[in-house]
Length: 231
Image (cartoon, rainbow, N blue to C red; front, top):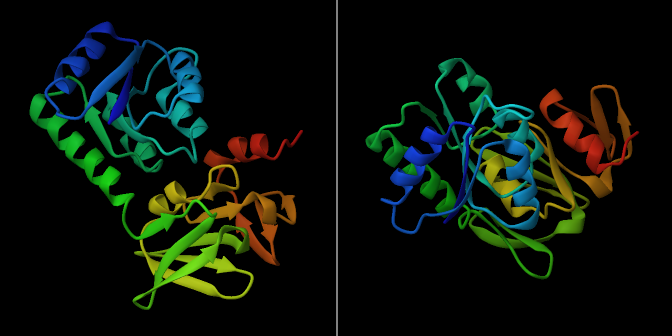
């Protein structure tokens, strides 16, 4: 598992790097003192995991995470302040570590991160032929990516809306987001992932796709506008 450490505090970076050395299979690729430099790194190289501070100059850890929406990256926040935890977990992060980080707590966070990495191999798989294979009533069915309009969270299930029929499968939105092609699909709400190619209209508060109004959460609006080249 390849990881970055992003923290403007040198002691915090050194501590995390030392703890990371104790985890088999975990490699710290680089360390950054600000989120903007880390973001440029992430544009060039696929990283599995980021240990990310929240309060940093120029760009906060939360802002960086939102800019990475749709990317296949596991986030573990590190902060000396607990008040950011609720907002952080709304971004579907793996864990929230309070500084100073103890070895025991670091191991717990890594256990969660590794479990997430393993879960990506389950429930939903994408083939090289641009098909999604889903388990439907104990039968694995092939679903063309181009047929998917959007996906909706339904508790412990995800419902895929397509041209012909709808599929309800056991799984999480995070797993669906990680498996759908990033160039064609984008998260716009905690409960919705949409196909950019299927958008009919963009209006205040939401999107219309195939006659369905889909809300856009404020946390995802900026990224969506950028992807759509909205001026």
